[in-house]
Length: 321
Ligand SMILES: [Zn+2]
Ligand SMILES: [Zn+2]
Image (cartoon, rainbow, N blue to C red; front, side):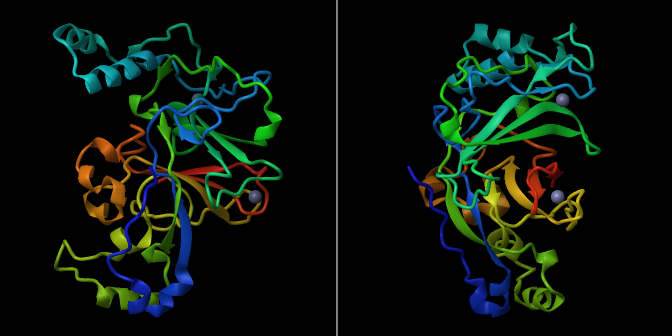
C-alpha cells in the first residue's frame, strides 16, 4: 500500500507568496511493520551485506556490559503484541536491565546494529557518493559517542550489483544500552512531499507576515510550524527542524556546510502534527501505528544525520532535536 500525505490545510504560498523562495522537497519514508528482505529498502531488516566483508564493529572506548538483552527486547515486544499468558507475564517480569555481558571490556569490539538500508531506486532525493545506489545505516546502541553522547552512527554506501552473495547470518550486539534503539522490521513507502524552511530560519520580513497570519489564540488553528513547514517522521533530505535548540549551523570540519541526509524520528506523527497523517492511516491514527519502528531517540525527538555538501568522505554529523 502506498502512503499519501494529504494536501496542506492552507496553501501558505497563496497567503505569503515570498515563501515560494523557501520551498523544498523531502521524502517521507513511511516505515510500517513488515517482513523486508535484503533486496528491499527497510528499517530493521536484513541488509544486502556481502558475505565476504567483515560486519562493522564499534571499538570506541565506552561501557558495553550493562543494558538490555536484545533477545529479551524482541521477545517482550512479541509477547505483548500477542497478549501474554500468566506464565509469559512472569517471564516478562524477570527481564531487567543488568550486567548482561560481564565478559566485555570497555574497548572490546561489538557488532553494530543494522538500523536501515535505502536503495536509491526507491527513495527520490537520496544522494549517494560515486556509483553507490544503496545506503546502509548502522548504530552502536549506547549513549556513549561523540561530544553529545549519542548512539554511534555509521554509514556505508555501496553499489548493490557489487554484492554477489549476501551475508546469511548477520551479527548484532547481545546487549543494547536502551531497548528503544532496537528497530522493528519495517518496509518503506517513500513519498516526496513539499516542505518550507523552519520558521526561525526565514528572513525577518516573512516571519513578521507569518506572525500576523497565525492564530495564536486557537490551539486547533493551522500552524506554520506544525502543519506547513516540515513533516514529522522518518525522512530523507528536506529541511531540518530545530525545536529544542533553535537553528544551528551544521558545518563540516572542512568548513563547508553540511546537508541533511536522513532523519530518524521517534514518531510518525503526534497530536500537534496530525495533519500529516497519511490518508491510508487516518482510520487508525490514534493507535500505535505512529510508532512503527519502535525506535525512540533522545527524549522522543529526532536524530538527524548530516553529511558534507562537498565531499562525502568527510565524517558525518549527528544532531538530536
Ligand atoms: Zn559504541
Ligand atoms: Zn567537508
